[in-house]
Length: 328
Image 1 (cartoon, rainbow, N blue to C red):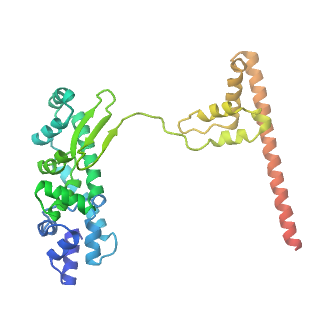
Image 2: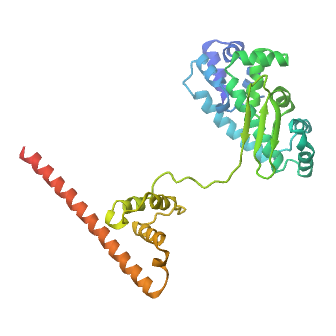
Image 3: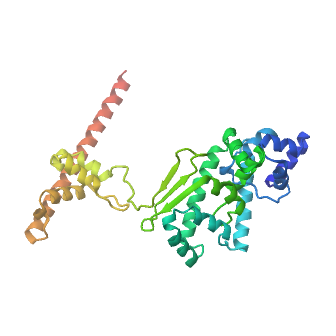
């Protein structure tokens, strides 16, 4: 079952009309009609509030319409991608994006766009501009005051403005329309700039509609943070007789080591600590190698002995506890 069929059945069961549903969802009756006749693809559930409003009005289980819409969209989009490859931006859309670029770079960016039609740079810029404006539109979707002010600027009704936002939230870089540009990108974006070396972008929005709003987007390659201490290091630090009273700086050094998914043993950390304290200690000479292996073997035996002692203590404590319970 798709969204339109589920809504039609529920309207019939409740004896309601399309105009009643349009009023409840705060959209135009024309939009509901196109949705129910399949002329419009159901909007993406995570970008709209319409399913919650319609579901409440139709007294449907929470999330039912969203789930149906999500499934229906995936099937339709899958067929569309198989049948029709993505098309480049419309000329009017590209011209708007270039016009909003800071003046000092317009000529350079235009040359790149024309040399590589809908290439990596043009797609990147388009996607980021859409993302930022969509975020604003979604945040303001529940603000009647903001919607009324934007509707007045465009000479539209409040309901028609909501429909425009819902349709805009469904747009992407491959199907952004001239209507999307006229209604949102043009009035909301004041300017944008990009560093062609790092591809960091700065997007400034219309201060009259979004006061003091500027967004900076950076693309920096960073190593993934290691949030948890390695088990081998934890075990190593637990043995004072082995870690030799490692200082705070030495421990920080050991924590900073990265292993790409591997988990070194406590013995590895012992060797690293000795190497840090005395690099000559681990030089691969014959005598040094024999000494290193002998000392490492002693450390390993000591750690095994300590581990056995702890196990015996835990067993003994457990035995005492059992004995006391039995006695009582």
